[in-house]
Amino acid sequence: MSDPVLWTVAAMAEAMGAEPVGVVPATVSGISIDSRTVAPGAAFFAIKGDQHDGHNFIAAAASAGASLAVASTQKRGLAPGSVPLLVVPDVLAGLTALARAARARSSAQVIAVTGSVGKTSTKEAVKLALGASGETHASVASFNNHWGVPLSLARLAPSARYAVFEIGMNHAGEITPLARLVRPRVAIVTTIEPVHLEFFDSLEAIADAKAEIFLGVEPGGAAVINRDNAQFGRLQRHAHNAGIKKIVSFGQHPEAGARLVSYTPESAASVVEANISGARITYRVGAPGRHLALNSLAVLACAHLLDIDVVRAASALAELQPAPGRGTRRRLQMPDGPGLLIDESYNANPASMRAAFALLGQAPVGPRGRRIAVLGDMLELGPASAALHRALLDPIRENDIDLVYCAGALMQSLWQALPDARRGGYAERAAMLEADVLAAVRGGDAVMVKGSLGSKMGPIVDALLRAYGGSSARAEARA
Image 1 (cartoon, rainbow, N blue to C red):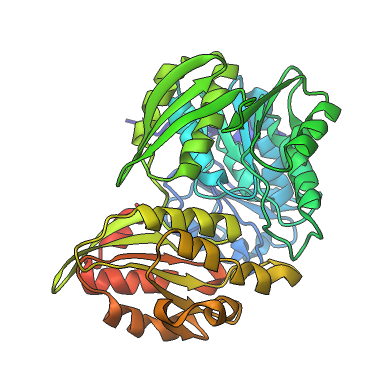
Image 2: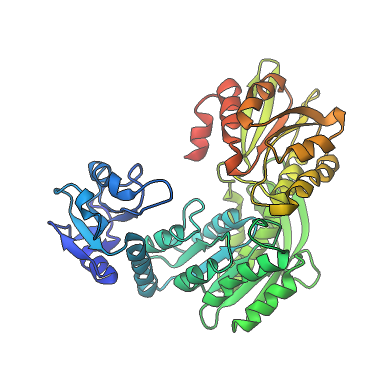
């Protein structure tokens, strides 16, 4: 059976203003910017990133089966003569132009998700919920920046009924062009928290930057905003100023349009009772965590706004699983018995740390088991960093975390605040902590590893799985 057609090459060339070079194929089945994962029949866009220039990988992409490459006018000479090309002045601008054409040809109901925390898990939950009612396209992983959003949009097939995109930012002004590119019918803001404070002087400034998503909402579209967050009023005003008339709130607040009635945690799931625009519903979320339960309200509010069967959408959430590095659970088998590993190594900020401590506090332990947190630096917090790291002591106490290991210069602030009874170990770098953690864990323990991606906590997860969980466990989680 032939591969499905995503784009005709003629349509690509027209959208990008590209010059064909060589014998180009009639169609492509996909779009890629990574020569390591490009699928046969796809078009490879040779984007120049911070670390690598895609033009140096055109040959590798062709060997992997790419049917053509998109290259810049200046660097087309780096492509082997045998590789068909579409040549454009700037490859990223060409990808963005193709994304714009994808949006123009699509009749899908489009949803965009932003927020300080919970973007990816909420995007995945929206994909599941809407997918129960029709073909749903979504950005993969955390493709939410100036190249990830255009790439995800360029991959949107004309046959999709729904499409979900995640939009992130580090600085003011970054969301506006992406929101106007995506043009969502519904825009969701999960929450506003002290994240990226290195680049903002207040939570209000973060809220203003996140509210840029409303500038892209289609006429007649809607906004879904966290009613429990202190920035709700500010976000609501931004939505009104953007011309949005349908604004639905979610949360525990008694005035929330999608309101949490009750939350019952289970070891690997959550049971939620909610009131969605006046209708009472009970459903299961397939991963534990109050934060996931609350964000599921935004998902169902979105379904209701799109006239989708809310009960069917809610039922689909039973299949929700945490993404790798964002709460993935794996069994450990120590010599003296089994234990639990919670992998939160993908990212960290004060809000996600609190949520992770709550998960660890609910995790089951054996008769001699302890709850152990292995923590790396939270990055990009600016002048408040030391205080925000020290403030983690309160949720550690509240959730009965028995032992804490800290890695990194910033985590030293927490380490110094910890009472002796809770001190597991400290090291300047995560790699220096690995042996101590491996030696400390025992049967019955629940171990949570968390830190910003730059703090390199992932190798500690790998080491635990190699020693006590099997070397393939993390690879299976990624798959």
